[in-house]
Image 1 (tube, rainbow, N blue to C red):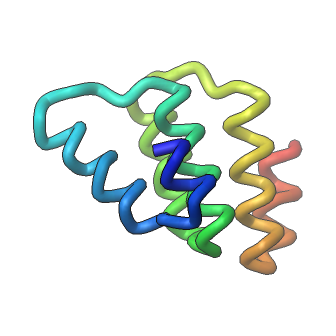
Image 2 (cartoon, one colour; image 1 turned 60 degrees about the horizontal axis):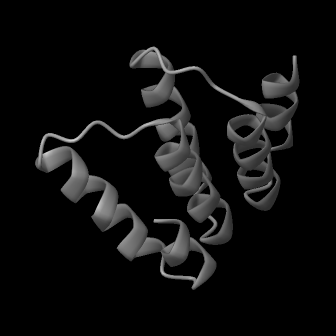
Image 3 (cartoon, one colour; image 1 turned 90 degrees about the vertical axis):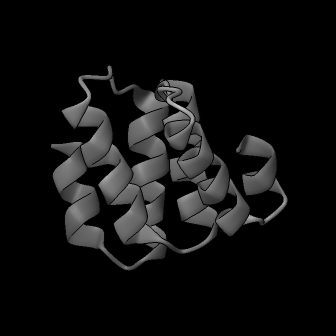
Length: 88
């Protein structure tokens, strides 16, 4: 997923995430962080926020990378208010 993000293949990154879930694998924080970073590169702010919400719902421990990538996605998507909400 990270390699897809770095190569600008956002859709492929999300396909891999979906395949993981369909195979019964549980994405961890690192996997979600990579997917959220792909959202930032692919200008998919809503998807980044959905992934953040999914992480919270699964009880995963959000880290600095999670918040940084999500805030960056919000910035790219002109969602300054949402980015500021994440900081508080």
